Image (tube, rainbow, N blue to C red; front, top):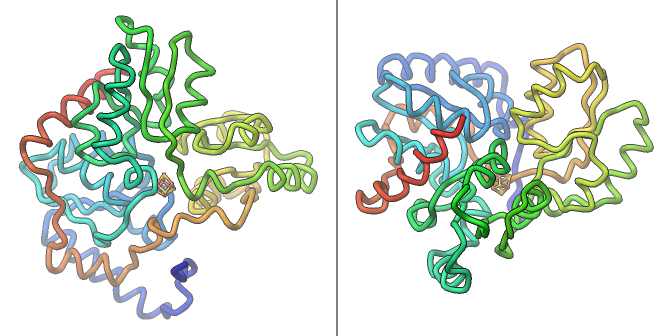
Length: 316
Ligand code: SF4
């Protein structure tokens, strides 16, 4: 497994300061907007114009006046920004940043599943390739997956791809028959029930908040299951002061920053998405300097994928 220096210990404070100044200057010169996902390294989250989850960042990308969208996330997110913003340049500082969900469901497998369930609407989690989105009826995020599935009034059956665990969670909150693919998020699926049990014993007053990409037996132990944006809202509203965080470790930094008066405990320090940690300040600065690597989606696929994303965006 690749080693990821998530604390960026090899980077001195002075060097980071210089890079931050450079990035701010380049951002202005290029009329760029920097969008960062909640799972990015702390220093990348800090320099972003907006930090959030897939749905929030998709919406910001669609309404931005910037000429350049610099996406600090993984490839499928930058592809979504390119799909929604054909006139803008979308750059991804780490072009190799993939996602086990997006990478493990091929278009061929989706076509096979579609032929197996011809009466099912195809609902595709945004954590998927542009090609898979283009083959789907509608997209969803972890924040609106249940809402999207229940909005499909003309269908009694749904083929939910790619994430098995999120699809299973949706199936518990709908009357529709839900068919699933065997694809999982590496970072969330590896969390074991025993980890959650141990942390709950260690912190009996803490609320356990978990992402629906976790296994069903982990979600059963959670006080609240939601996307990362939903987690932030819950922390602000719940009245509790301690939280066990059952999602990628970058979210702990985000929550601690937004709610410095509360305590947050990662449910496991193994919940790291290595792909999300590939972007460093150096790579971000280089990307803004050279306006590369550009992420593009072939026009035929883009138009079809956009339909599936637009249908989701219309659901409030
Ligand atoms: S945390 Fe999981 S779903 Fe998110 S980008 Fe990483 S592998 Fe994909």
